Structure formats: C-alpha cells, structure tokens
Length: 101
Image (cartoon, rainbow, N blue to C red; front, side, top):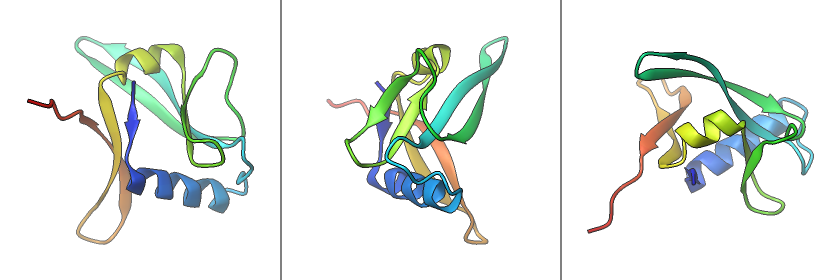
C-alpha cells in the first residue's frame, strides 16, 4: 500500500486548506491518465471527497490520499513524499519504498 510521509501529509493538509476544500473528507487524488509502454502518466488533483471505488490512504481527521483503482495498483509499493527545488518550490514525489534488510 502507498505510504505517505509526514512531510507529504502536512503538504496535503495545507493544499486542501488553500484550495478551499479543507473539509475532513477532502484529499489528494491520483488517477491513471494514460499507459504508455512501461510508463504510466498519473493525474494529481485536489478532491472534495473520494470517488466510488477509490482506495483511501490516510489517518482519521488527517491528510487523505484517494487512489483510483488502477493508480492504487501502480502505487502499491511506493512512498509519497515532498521535495523542495532550488527555488524553494515544493512538489510531490513518488519514490520506491525502502526495502528492510
């Protein structure tokens, strides 16, 4: 299952509040946009609530991530984090999960 870092959870909370959808039901939604060869394009949006069939990742009362079924399969072994670039802009990043030895 997708893991959400604390930094990503804070960014999701801030983003949903900024978008005016800061209700307890709102969250960040991943949906499969297209499949090309070995790669997939995912669409990322702020959603007021999950859609039918979405898998919900997140804590009660905290940041939520909604995963469309095909996106959930693609992100099953990933970590959602945030990274800051040289200009200070923050972007979400999907990273491989660290394998424990």
